[in-house]
Image (cartoon, rainbow, N blue to C red; front, side):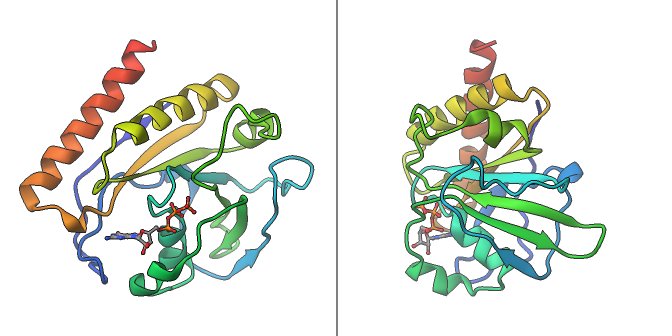
Length: 199
Ligand SMILES: Nc1nc2c(ncn2[C@@H]2O[C@H](COP(=O)(O)OP(=O)(O)OP(=O)(O)O)[C@@H](O)[C@H]2O)c(=O)[nH]1
């Protein structure tokens, strides 16, 4: 399993100012812009899209900004418009197809997803996925998010030891420059400590 991090990228400031601190997609997952096919479905089971393209899972607490990231990056939505996004209540599955070389599935999860719900099928969801992108709202008290990150990593790694994890520290537009660095360090430290303690 891998968890990587790097500093803020201030190039695309958008309406939130610089809103990300943190971690990018795993290089091996591929990443690009282009036409998308909406395939919104309600579960990760039989209706899973089955082909050989890599799959990325977008996870994190409610309102952390998962759908906003997806809409701004892949649908060219203006960051202002994300204010009006409704909460996601079922897995939203899309194909991102930039070229014949850069194609992948991205599944946006509802924030309130319950790993212990019998309808949640970890084997299907984590088993066939290349990476989990976990989004943390830096303007919120992130202890709950860190707990959820820990659960997600533990659960996913058990099913699929080769899955990659990337953590996006999001909504840093509300933090001062010093606070951004401190927050990133603190989240990184706590997440690593939790995972080391768990073995
Ligand atoms: N300040 C700030 N707000 C943001 C940013 N990104 C998203 N938001 C706001 O955060 C709120 C929640 O965004 P969503 O994208 O719906 O969050 P989500 O994680 O998909 O939420 P669920 O579907 O409930 O799990 C919206 O009001 C967004 O406008 C950001 O970078 N900065």
